[in-house]
Length: 175
Image (cartoon, rainbow, N blue to C red; front, side):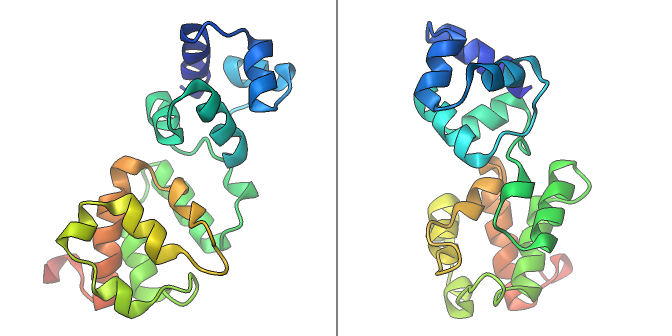
């Protein structure tokens, strides 16, 4: 759980709650609630600051914590349908690959994705899924392509592969 990972990493770095809280620009009380599990869904910004101070990636923080949805989707500037799909994927009711296919099939315009760029993703791009997804999703609406952070790193290649399949109009049976 995120709470256990935060506490273990903080203690491993030899930091008190107060020290970590100040460096991550959160209150000590809020950090205590995260560490005890009272609060379970910190914002992406808070996770980034905590990860930076602890010298781990947000992905590591979430994956080690088993809480890939610890990022609060409510605060994300994303289309509602996408938030719902990501929440379903985090609960295991839908795969991130299926979310990618759905985006490729139906919502390229919603994310200002260049269809030609998606269709031209090659094997080298698939081997660098995070970089490729950030490039594809970077737009006026999402200048830093931060929405990629809502997809666990271990699932990004499958998401990207199925995004391309969806854009090609392929189904799993077609592959």
